Length: 362
Ligand SMILES: C[S@@+](CC[C@H](N)C(=O)[O-])C[C@H]1O[C@@H](n2cnc3c(N)ncnc32)[C@H](O)[C@@H]1O
Image (cartoon, rainbow, N blue to C red):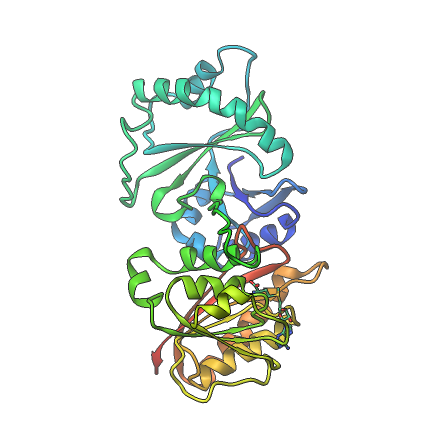
């Protein structure tokens, strides 16, 4: 039976499964879920095989909050022999289909990490063999035309691999959907990676010069000790940092930061000259959602990047959807034209990141 395999953060399989099942149904695709608990993998078995392909073309991966990456299975899991694994995989693939690139992947777990050495060893001979037979493009050329596909080989162990494919135009550009970033030593906290990843994920590279430009004004709510402020400062922005806690000295000495020791739910800028609002306050997600919508309605920012914290309970997908709906309703009532995407990013833990951008007034 054909399935769509989805990668998510280990521990969030239920959320990822609930989401794909609901959003698939919106597209009239139905099936059942099998989760690999704490392995960050979800199998969505579709009732009609052809629907799997239809769905991964029609539903933008960017519209899924909990899935980092996905692919459609090519048959069942392949049992690999102790020797001649390359031949075994090549044989299953045949010669009929052609892929732009291959991703050799594992579950995002400690066992998965252990497998990476094995994968590295297999990588060169497997690529060589697939190129020779024409299954894999001669060179990874970055072909992202509509039909171009990626071959996924998801190794569950040294003896089992699940093969599948995704479309270059609707999948993550990163192996396992994970964009690993280097922690900048000068940042006062590791949270900095969350905002860095969010900017790289949500803002197209060619628009960084305009939308993440030096000189823009930004507000950081819940800023201490300054990991998020650091990302704004390093891009040359002027930051109003709001938090009762102390800010990092080195950041304050840049002259780009003004610290307000106040309540982030009450503080408001005097002028309407702020482009960015970022918010990492550990607070009730509904309170944060309402606050963000209010800033936008009041014209106090043009773009916002914020976290919605998730409780360690069931129903977290529904909770995120409910809070996004609060924002949508408020903006619609105020005739604001906007775009909003949410993602459970790699550096997020018990939270999802939301990007909200005002496009104009209706
Ligand atoms: C996760 S930390 C922020 C870390 C910060 N983004 C960084 O990268 O260093 C959450 C912060 O929110 C602040 N906070 C929580 N509630 C707040 C409120 N009502 N007003 C202002 N700050 C608040 C806390 O003091 C804490 O410093």
